[in-house]
Every structure is written in structure tokens, then in C-alpha cells.
Length: 400
Image (cartoon, rainbow, N blue to C red; front, side):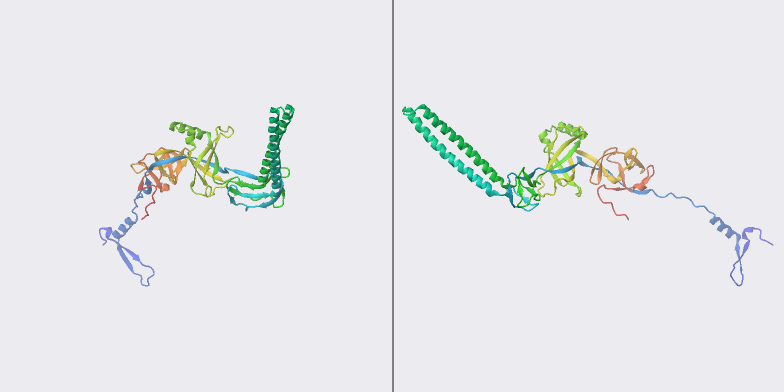
């Protein structure tokens, strides 16, 4: 007789692989429990909000700059030429040397011009002697005319001889000065402190035959000019700011200018504004401006292209965020902020200049906005995140 409840039935279970097949009997209730457990469905558990680093905008005073690209130019550069004809007798410097003002660089056959000077000096001495004799004769004839011993005609002739002797002396003195100048030209000297280029003529060559012969070039490197151009809009903005502050053209010349070479970081070279053109170039719409720099170490050489910046004004309590925190789309620049409910929002902003690694934000951001500065890929607008507050400008804390 079978049991009244089928749940207590046993099911035979044969275990294959055994030599002596044994039959295990398992209650049907146990099989039902196993079956129900296997068919139970899993429940979805949402992942926790993504962690992102946020920071409050840095608030500080920043200086706004006008930036441009310029080129360096020497304050003085002169071609050294032979102003007298003769054989180049000596070269008294090394090519590329730094020389002082007045240093003799070339010597051009001085003996010939020295003799011409001595000849002129001798002629001047003879003219002085002739004038002395003529003056003595004039005094004697004047006395004789007073005593009515000689005629007035004799006195007139003596006067003419004296005046002629004076003119001859003046001519002789001029000839002496010209001879002295030409003799001085036989020594070509440095007109100022500077670097002298390689010589263009060799010792023994005849120079200054038909026209002045260029011998070399001397360039002054300290101080040095930096020329750059300012566009018309910036000119208007600068003039308006200067007018508002009551600055004069003299004050503008005291404006500092900073430059940096292409291989340098920042703007290490400091100078002052030296010149601004009185007119704007109509073809380019720019104003030519020039700065002057001490360049005592002669790092800046004429012809370099340099980065230029001129401080315009200071902005008090400017807001800055890391430049890497900014994104851009077709409508402009934006940052991601986390609101009070820890939901990410996309905020359109107006950006200003870069100050190191931080970007000035001119509009669209408040001091208490939490800006996403790291984990940007995990910060999706409209979704909740787990913000980790960091201090902008300081290294992040190490992850656990």
C-alpha cells in the first residue's frame, strides 16, 4: 500500500560507474526544494555613484597682459668704412670681439697723411710769418702817412698786403685742420661699445679708392630694442584705460615690457616701453611699438623672434579653475559643476587669460560652485556623483 502523501515518495537514483550499482532513494520533497532554489531570480542592485574630484574656484588678484610676437633689433649698428685712400696696414681686433668706444680697429697707411699734415703745418707757419711782416709794414706806413712823408696810395697798398696775408693764414689753418682730419681717418676706431663683425678686407689691400670701402660692422647689444605690433582694438582699449587713469604719454613710456625666447619658460627679460608710432598702419590695422631692454648678459641677439607681453591692468578677486577642467563644444567653453544634490551640471562660462595652469573665468561661475577637476569622464551631466572636495592648486591626496 502506497503512502497517502506523495511528497514522501522516494525516487531511485542510480550512480553509474560503480561496479555494484546501488540505488539511492531521495525524498521528492528534497528534490522540490532544490528545484525551487535553482529557479529563484536575481534582483538588480544599482552601483554606487561615481567618485569625482571637485574644487571651489581659486579667488585672487590677477594681472591681465597684452601678448604679441616681436623681434629684437640693435639700438646702434654702424658700418666701419675707410674714409681715406690707402693700403690697409693692420687689423687691430679679433673677429667677433667686444670692443670699447675709441678702440683702434684698422690702420690705413698713416705715414702719407702724417706728412701731408706736417706740410700743411709748415705752410701755416709761413703764412703767419708773412702776416706778421705785413702788419709791421702797415703800422709803419700809417705812421708815415700821419707825418705826410708817404702818400695815401702807399698806405693803401700796405693795407691790401696785410689783408691778403690774413686771408692766406686762414686758408693755411683750414688746410692744416683738413690734413689733421684725414690723418685721423687713417685709424678706424669703434664709435661705441659693441661687437665687431668679421673683417671684410685683408691687410695689404688698397681701400677707399673711388668710394668709402666697408671694412666691418659694429653692433651694440646692450641695450637692445624689441619691436612688436599692437592691433587696433587693443590700442583703443589701452588708450581708454590710460585716459581713465589719467596717464600721460610720459607715463606710458614707463610701462614695463616682458619678453621670452622661444626656448625659455615664461618671460624672464624685463624692459620698458620706449616708443609707439603716432599713426596706425592702415594696411595692417596695427600700431608699431618698441621696448628697450638692458641685455647686460647679451642673451638677446638682433634678429630673434620673441614672445612679448605688456601688463594692462589688475583684476581684483578673479575666479580661476584648472585649465584641464574646461571643455568646449559648438556653443563655446564650459565646466562641469556638482549642485547641492550632487548632480552634475554643464555650465557655460566666459574664459579669460591663462595664469600658469589655471584659467581665469570672466563669467558664468560663482565662488561657491563645486567644479569637477578630475574624473571628468565619470561626470555625466544629469547623473549623481560622489564628490570628493579638493583644494585647487594643491596636489591631490593619494588614493587609498
